[in-house]
Image 1 (cartoon, one colour):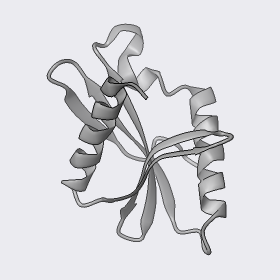
Image 2 (cartoon, one colour):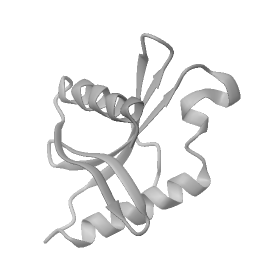
Image 3 (cartoon, rainbow, N blue to C red):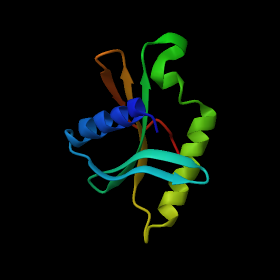
Image 4 (cartoon, rainbow, N blue to C red):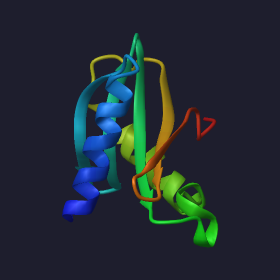
Length: 113
């Protein structure tokens, strides 16, 4: 991963931790793709996609999470869950960073499953 991506993920992790989530995994990789952050929000397991864009061109960071990306996230999350003894309640969030200094937007439940 490039330094800019690492910095974005670190900023996103700090952001969600400051709001009460606990990071349990970073950069979980499997054959289906990668989960940027996996966190606990109480009893809920949260899969967090981190996106950084310099501006809003082409729809900005949110628009970059298209149907193909959502499909890869679902498959990677299922792979992650297969390694647990019991599947907890789950949700998919996105932390979007845009501009400089970055503005942070936290979108919850970006995938309805």
